Length: 348
Image (cartoon, rainbow, N blue to C red):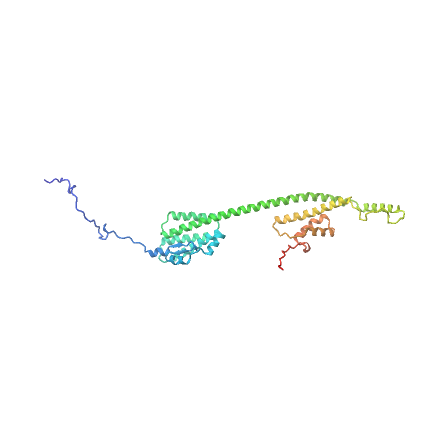
């Protein structure tokens, strides 16, 4: 009796013998799938360059064995750059990477996608080498990170992109350190400059107050009637001379032949002369401060010689300011002091 239900055309409990399923194309057999095309290894080697830690050059993989036999120690140029200037050392590495990318971009069989990435890297490297602006460098880092996030090129180009990103990040770090150091140095210079200016201002205020006192003394002295006082002194001297027994000038009463001083005693005269000297020095100091503030050339003048010249020429105190200003703007050679030269030791 047949157990197959009439509702089924095929017995569901029947297992057919194994067979091979084929498509219209006999080559597309599941047992023998078609091999995928793979780029030959020569194309990969032509664009892959390995970094040499000694000379910091990018060496093609086909020349590594030959280069490793020659370059066995760090070059003097690399050691000097890393010792003296870390920023220039990073720029040197970026320049080497840019040169390699330019050589790869000239290859005729280069993948168009890889070529586009290389062109972007070359443009960014030129920007990095010609700027120290931190904001520009940070924008380049953001652009490179975006490229790496959606990268579709070959492994070699990705390696170059990651290396370039790392070098730019190092450059940003060194520039920030340099900027902080410059800020600290400038801050210290400003502090010392403020202290110096404050000290000079205090000296100016002191000499200014002394100058006001001296001006009052000068005015008081000028208002006195010197001719009248001298006449009275001569009259007294003649009367005393007539009282002498011999009537001669060789009297036992001796007088100072110096003209009468309106200041009174010699101590007070010396004190006033010292005040006048301080007043002259204050004018010179004030002129030096003005030149320092305006960052103008300050001649090395001998203030003592200038003061002696003022005294010898009887220049009144009210004209001292003009005299000092003239000498600092157009100094006379006789007031200019030359810096002493170091004497060389001679062996006998």
